[in-house]
Length: 285
Image 1 (cartoon, rainbow, N blue to C red):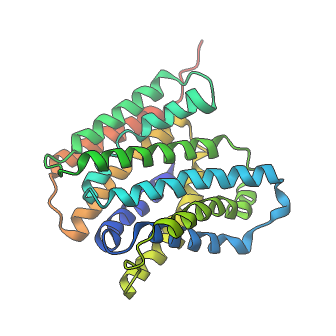
Image 2 (cartoon, one colour):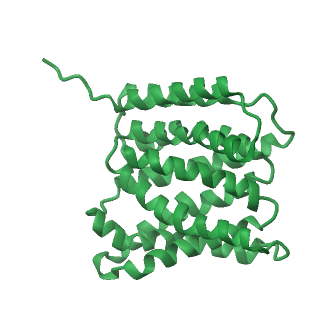
């Protein structure tokens, strides 16, 4: 669980960096492709192609294409319609998507009721944090975020259920994950990029390097490794811890106005949801 908490803090910073330095300034398709390409280059030297058969390679690439390739295309478009706080707010349903995908599409077994309750509590906690002022473009932004949420949820559960071997084996084959993401985002870049909005200064390139190598490369490897060591309920509820963490970073570093009472109350409720999902079932006598 500690790994999920650390990556949550890492991604909270990344949300603000996107909103402050890239959204509306660098073409979203190009920004996503640069991130995925940098992450791919990070793992290519470690790649051991002979360890996986072609079906396994294609499966891992497909998961990467969905979980972060397609997800980021929706996410970066949403930043054109929403503020950072609104983007974070509209991710509240991700825990429910994770449980839904795991139970109905992949695992095909009934999840413990406690995990569904924890996911619902996590949604409630995120809703408590919600801002009263919502922009006029919120419907478009909301739909884009829900598409991104579903892709991210489906990719997490698919990787969790995929036989991938030891941590060392996963590290040596994780490049395939970014092969899929790079192909999706690369094709989108060729088709839709506005080449008038390329990175134009050192700050933007620095942010992209951070997002590609650290937030995407290290972040997704560690998150997916940790996802295999926790139950579905814990994974689902931890997805919503990004909301209070992201808003806190946005308020502290960029002085955005924040209702701290609601933020702390919502964060406490989400923490309760994580604790509920983490409880071990009581053994029967």
